Length: 156
Ligand code: 4NP
View 1: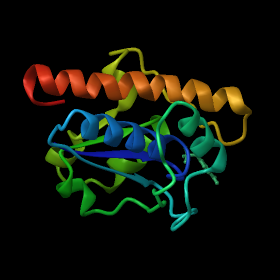
View 2 (view 1 turned 135 degrees about the horizontal axis):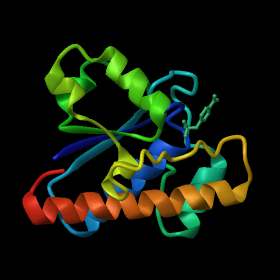
View 3 (view 1 turned 60 degrees about the horizontal axis):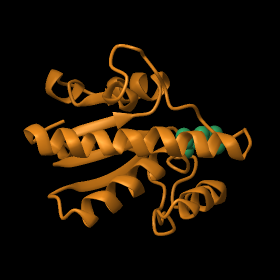
């Protein structure tokens, strides 16, 4: 199972989703390839935001090795599922898709936990520490769900 996590900058939300899922699948020896990307290249080559790295570290997840990169068209074929954090990410990723097969891979990540509620993972970039903790809790739950779904039926 190849999973790509996507947000705007690839420095806050998607690196966390990436690092959480990588840690969990490694701990449980599950056959996943996990990566993340941004819909923008604003922060290309940068580490995750220091506040996100710190929050993740406090909860036992290392993000220090991740570097931001923009999503590419080849990602749309390379990955089995592409989880997005909010509606802008959804619109932007759908906007570079050219086939229905690609479009069907694009899933708002909180649909895993709260189907039909159109919930988003809010961008914590301009807020305080609590925003980063809230994002951690949402993505911890969502990545647990990815794993439990995989164990139950071998797919998303
Ligand atoms: P992210 O947060 O999409 O969760 O990585 C952001 C980080 C930086 C910016 C926007 C969103 N920015 O515009 O610089």
